[in-house]
Image (tube, rainbow, N blue to C red; front, top):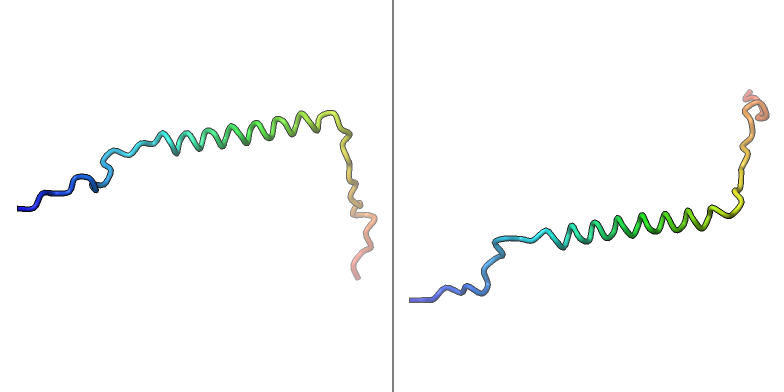
Length: 61
């Protein structure tokens, strides 16, 4: 009679700690990146771009 190989059994209880941890770590990194970028740009002057008014454009023929 052959003995079953129990070492190659598929995983019965998968842990969700790694995917959730990576997701939370990624969200934290993005929030930190945006916060640092906002703080860095806060002291600089802002550039304003003025678009032409519709009355300045020639009328189509």
